[in-house]
Length: 196
Image (cartoon, rainbow, N blue to C red):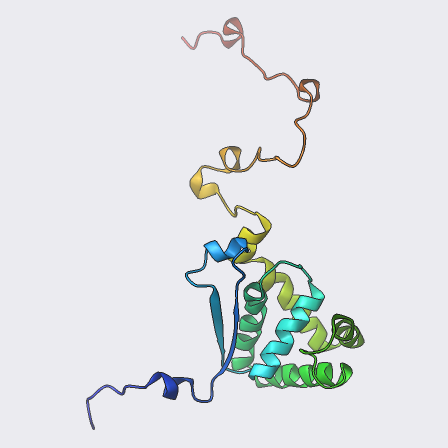
């Protein structure tokens, strides 16, 4: 046997791999977090058209006008990972995206917003619809990019808790009148007593 390490060129490594890609707009809060404005997601079980359809479906199910597609790509990534170890899931996702294409007149990804919405609505309640919808709930909102986009600081217990990290950051609400809050308790020295 030859002990030389096998080397692959980039072209050989990507041959046969499906890849979703996009860019984050310069005005997005997320552009400051990412090392590059371009993003790419290599798919293992899903085809590129299926991945693009699922990404577009996630955008229909949970629309946020200014949320970059890079955040919606987390849904595709998690479904692709799950489908890699589950042939039935992979088949269901492929069949579901084919139904989306058929319901939107050929290409779900290039359909109008109304066409996409009608196609997704027509599949409501199906196992495919429920799988994508339930994956969106976790994958779309439970990641650092979504936290940053929506202004959630994340868990701050490692930084001393919420009292000094966002607990009182209500810039969008007016300050309440002083009468709305109870007076702070100040212990009387005579009520403390002596411990001796």
